[in-house]
Length: 326
Ligand code: ADP
Image: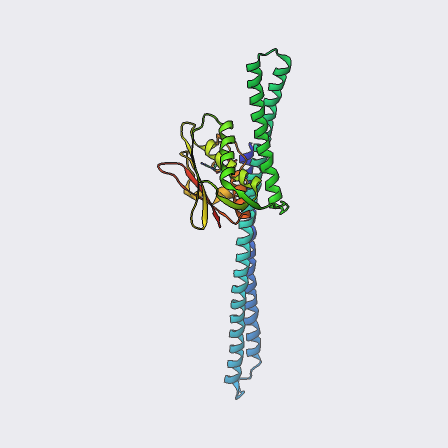
């Protein structure tokens, strides 16, 4: 039995236990109502027996007993419905939280598998490259090629560990803010340069307005741009260019990253900014990733009181727009 089947079975078991428990509680509730109502009728019957037929106040006494019985019935129904509603609301809330927890645990498991893989691969490649450099007598060009490949792998490791570290720091509110006036145009240009060094085969069309300044944290902004560019690179065929624009309007600044990749289905759009969330299933996914990139982008834009939005590119692809307010 594989992990996925195990997980589905666990979900089924939890759901079955939950619904059985809920049915039992509702049945017990109804049983209590029936018992109380029966008791109410019995009390009324006993009271009726105490009235003498010859009593001149028989009508008034009968009415009092009937009124009391009716009041009690209304009280049981009113309180019963209130409790039942509160109980059902609580039950729905618990069930939804439970499903959310299970989904989160599932995503966390995927994240652990992805991180293990993402960590092991660059380490293994770097190890192999360095061993080859040590043991074999290579010419300078070959040596340079291996060193360059190793350097790229260490950059991959660096960006992965930065993503993980910053996510936990921002999550725990432990990130030391160092906001200052920064030249966004310059940071964008630097990010594009380093992106093109990492992916020389990818065409990048850029339109960067000069001297666009914001109050920001340079490291976080760099990470935001890198994550958006890396995603565009990962999820679009290498033949398609990536577009990056930076423009300042009246009181907003927009940073736009467009690609002509596979795009993101409309019903997934709200979820992709969640922690560890990745579109599709672990079995069918071909791209590497941890599901942290866009979560971090959202955190970074929140940190800058900015806004990140996803829309469709035409004919296909994604457009990520970050709006800073000045
Ligand atoms: P990952 O490490 O999986 O790339 P992200 O948080 O960066 O994690 O992205 C979450 C998911 O959103 C990705 O798994 C992918 O399915 C989808 N996604 C992100 N950017 C793009 C894009 N430019 N084109 C298509 N899908 C994307």
